[in-house]
Image 1 (cartoon, rainbow, N blue to C red):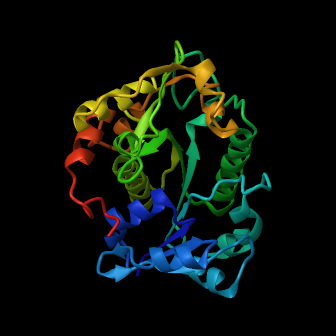
Image 2 (image 1 turned 45 degrees about the vertical axis):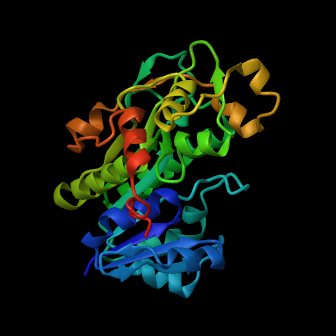
Image 3 (image 1 turned 135 degrees about the vertical axis):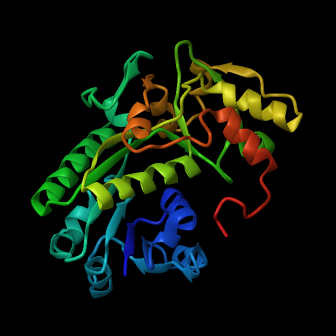
Length: 306
């Protein structure tokens, strides 16, 4: 019997479980909210519903038992729940260290750990130079997970993720809701990743661990970093509506949250060669164009969120 334990069952983990959960006999997810647990309990994994447990920053017998049963641990909880430390390592480390069946750990990180590179190309060999406090916390968490894996002799895959989009979270929805902005900042580019392609990267990393006992660091990013306004313009064209007017970043930031503004402080082009050469990933949506076209015609419920 194989068990997937998802520490954090948000957008990425939910899609992974819906698309690839059938490979496991049991899927367990955690959330801080009883209401969210009830909603996610309807997510299907093969023929079974995902089992949801509450994890609000403290261990419990139920959590410990589920971790003891885990074959694969997928961690998507960030280390910035307002505390700056990794809550999974802090509160569930003993259960993870003692888990007798655990064979693979996948930690979802962010390309923000690389910091700002003036639009230059970077890859997994580029040393992390985070400029944001939350990204620095991610680097520390990555190191801690790698150290735990080494101590347990478990492969650990660190997946550094670009901007995630997919069903309900994409430029089409922003344009339709009237909240899309075509922000112009000279030299600014972003990579993105469709959530279905991210799920594929996760699954290939699990395969690598279970079949070869190997982990590593992998960039989950698309093939084409572009200015931020390009997907907005493309989405508007797909919808047959006028795109929002371009707005200079200096003007746009006056109404943006500090969190949103922080993304524009970094520009880099992220190479994704390793997910192809090492994991064997073939991106379904190599650019935002393929991704948005598919989302524009995708019937409700097609994305694995049923």
